[in-house]
Image 1 (cartoon, rainbow, N blue to C red):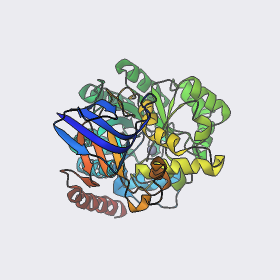
Image 2 (cartoon, rainbow, N blue to C red):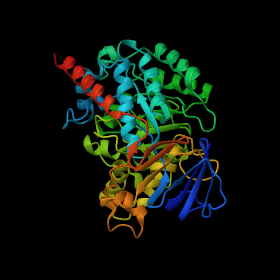
Image 3 (tube, rainbow, N blue to C red):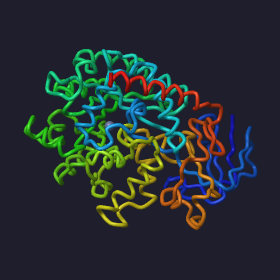
Image 4 (cartoon, protein in one colour):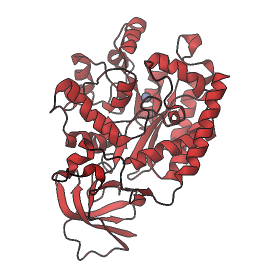
Length: 451
Ligand SMILES: [Zn+2]
């Protein structure tokens, strides 16, 4: 099936050779972009879409999330990370397969609506050893049709071992390793244009044993999958690591074999110059989560200092600390927050959008097929209508309007060659039935925790 998107008013490909095109076209064959250019007159296609009045850019890549947290938005609104976690674990311990399925649909729908075409997830708690919740989120992602790179997360230190979570949500190292191997074998598809890849992700240095961190590296090497965890998120974490391990978080990761090119870390707010050099030397990637960092008062990650040294993507983080899945807002916040600390030219609109697209693709090691618009890339791109109320007066250089104005949501989205949103509406997908069930589950698990 060939789809021709012609007459695109402003096409920003983020491909260095192709650059920006006014009045351009994109030809899609099945799930892949076949051609991009200016003259479409002699091109034949099965379906032709007139995209005059649209800005088109590559789809966004979200590099860190906890999809289930959409069930618990707006709670513990004034707490810092460790206190916030302790409060929410008592609710999260009631999540089950249905809760995960429905929250995955709701969170990914909000992401697709705000431009995400590829997302990861970090599911790290398994109440009462229920491994099936991970399978459940994969089924939900397949249903909605987002390109998915979830991580099989884990926690092995509960309150009785000096950790933060209750005993009921952690597993022991052997269970975690054997199930991690199981899901890689069952789901991981390393092929080009893959819609489903798996990474491994112990939750954080303070929630698993050093043994599990090391063994997870070996398992990831054996199957050539990526590794992910939270790192250097708060000052409290730095103090905890210094007290418990006698090392700063980045040094502790180095000792465990976690500074390598297959790793990306979420947050990395508390870094010194030495940390930055180590991360750069080892080609480690970063998921920058500015809204969560602001919401929990964690601090400002030194993205401006890091941007020429490591691979950087943007991430909404879990919806309990954001409390949206809005990727447009996240990329805007990334740009604005750097300016608070480093000045008005710290991060430009284009730089921020590149972090949100090709940057995220590099972090997930998928930049051979997502993150830009060019021949042989996957057909994942998004569009904004130029005649939006919110863009009025900002059309002389429309790329700026996407982040400097209030874009609200995308008006067009195609993922893997399938149109998901047209004229601002989901195609063949009823999100409202899921919102109703999602709210019922949310109320049920919160009531259980309170009773
Ligand atoms: Zn997180």
